[in-house]
Image (cartoon, one colour):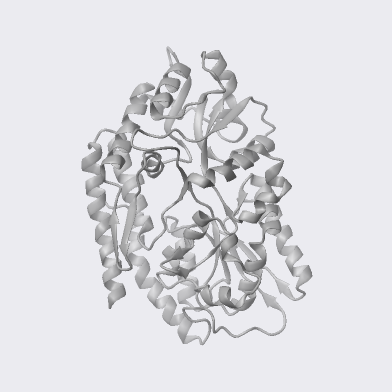
Length: 452
């Protein structure tokens, strides 16, 4: 498998980040911990870079900014919308690294996995602010979302919303195929059988397909979790071992191939996917796809496009090496740039933004979940059974892994290895062993540098 462009970008991040850190320190502003930043006097413009597309979610965000400004006269939020929110986006990464290196960083950043940037010296560490802020309660955050912002005790961001996944299924199509909609698939064997029974082929290909293994918000990582596995294990403060090539992970990768074969083969499925559209015409809404794995944001799409369908939600089916369901836990977070001149004011806003009432207002338009446990008491959750389902799923959720080498690992496993496996270019064990060699080198390199 060839190294991807994103992996090369990751390798170059440290050099740019080093320049960024020097620029920030040289300016006499915020240092690595962010606790010594001087307070600004007078009006404060908190330059905010976000990745929210125009629409209801951005409108809710803008309304929250306006409310904060009204309660804190003189505080304004110049906003800039960027494409992408993690290292795989050249535009996002390039703009941030260039701004920090030049000593003119934004104050607030919206991003996916903060430790990737934070450990590279590009973010303000938040631990000191947390200690001084008596109103901030770390224990109120769900463990999964919080874990995505922290690396060995160093906190690089705060979660406002979080997500996990479930099995969405069309009850009407279940009935048509002779399946009981009150008994959705629980295991991979159940899933295979239902996928076959729900699939309808035609002379031109498919009239509909029961299930597509890699359609929706899903990748090899999640199948590994669903089979009782993991992708990485920390064996100390200076050592980590890859787990995505262990037996239960290999079994999960082999299941991908098997699932494709059960519904007609990878090439035929990909050809059918090319007919799919988006928005209100997405295949699950139109009946082209009977089951899919996706997150709570589908509830927002159902409402937005006024989709009328009889659907159900169930935990994601689990594999033979697992004892029960598991789901991948993610979400987008908010950080302060290294070198921000308004670290305290930025923290004050983020601390306010993460509170249950504000987080819920931000979450509602897209059907997302606030990252706070106390948000469970709000009507948004208690009176919305779909959202409550996803909150309940957090009990068996595992956080999307986050570390300085996360992007390299994602590319190697969910990119190169996954593609080679489903296209039958390599068997699962070979592909994952090759990915393991690549990732372990990056892990060992990181810890070796930390020891210097």
